Length: 255
Image 1 (cartoon, helix red, strand yellow):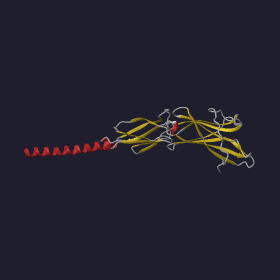
Image 2 (cartoon, helix red, strand yellow):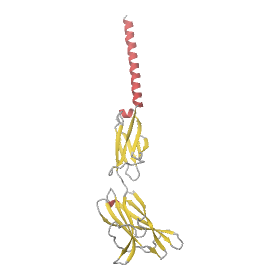
Image 3 (cartoon, one colour):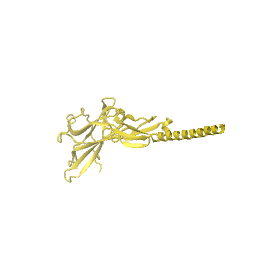
């Protein structure tokens, strides 16, 4: 009897250990198979506007935000998550500083709000005006721009305007690229820039109404705008009182 009881106890213990290993294995398997949803919205830190087509990477999975800045990603939990290993998240968007963070993930869904810092300078306004400087008795083209940079107006490195001239005889076009001069800061983040140009050259090259402005900051972020004056004859309204200086008359054209 004693031998039978001992045998039954041993057999029960073996069965119990087998079941425990099996159950633990199933638990580990279930942990590895758990899936959560990570979703959220990517917005401009300063304006709160949604950022579309931002590339979101969470734990190695990628997706793009929609036109409302929304994203949604499935994420499968692993044993590393149960050991509180951080999961990395990165977000990349044009003209924004990259966003990077880490999270300790639990088996619950997450809704995130990602705020990104705009990096590039902003061309708030640009104008082209035909202006007569009465004291100097000169009729010139004045190009002005109001620029804004979240990193500060001093972060703006260079501003260039491109003007277009047409030969009235051959009807060919040429461009003139003119650096715009800093005029004044109107706030910590905003500044006025200006360039002056001649309306015609050698009596056959006449300036056209369309013009471009290209801005680069100290970190290489840039903004570009193609503009046309609202009034094709007199141009736009000046942003600020124009500053007179003689335009460069030599080699104004680039091929």
